[in-house]
Length: 188
Image (cartoon, rainbow, N blue to C red; front, top):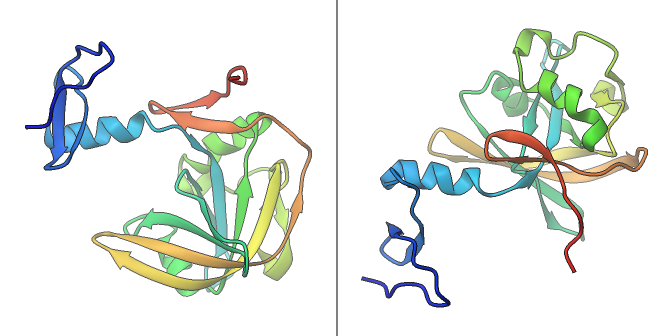
């Protein structure tokens, strides 16, 4: 058993793996502890868009977006291979990645909702390679998929960025504890 945390923290701890512990929620164990741990991890909100082979736009919100390398510019995101957008991502060469700010909350809600209605409205336009570009994003990047790595029922997607643009500045939109959130004051 790992020693109790120091610095006066007397909360109970639950073991997630043989070598990692975290503060225990009242009923957290096993997968529940894992799920609760990641709900506590705040993440920026992005939208990934693509086209089906028939040219229909698809997209989804993602909190798994990460920068992989600066040279060449590479980004990654993860998704379930059971997601409605997976067949398009699996079969396309290019995707668009959009970074969202607070003013795009409504678009984030649309893109995480009913997949048949995600492109109803004027929140997007056709961009490079015909890809859907979200019009109120703080930045968008278009990239060529260079790797699709299956992991269980999911996939890690690596994208080499080929072009992009900055939108109007905005405060970042985040996702934490199963809700969209705004950042608070800067810490010193």
